[in-house]
Image (cartoon, rainbow, N blue to C red; front, side, top):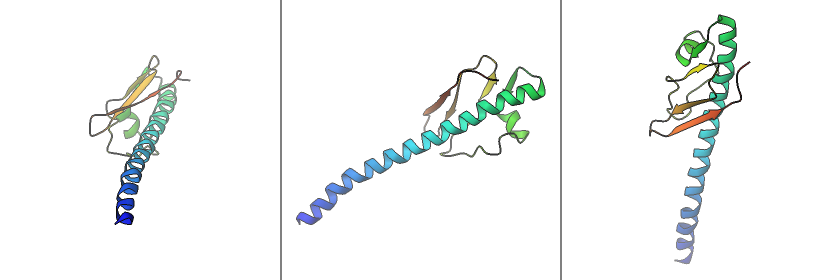
Length: 105
């Protein structure tokens, strides 16, 4: 009986810790994707001679092949301009993950 209760107690501690670690891993991966998008936007704007770059344009132009969806998040609303300092992705549950950067090239 004590062993059974110990197992339940251990499970109650380990499962939330694992879930929190998985969530943190997803957020960091999404932030990494956002970092790639921000960096690519600067290069895209310089190459094309334009003042803004949308995720959709860059994705359709195959500039973002390394950006893979991690947890069902959407990057579709991202538009980067020379003044942009923060970009965000929206997860299916409505949670927003953001990445702030110092500026473009």
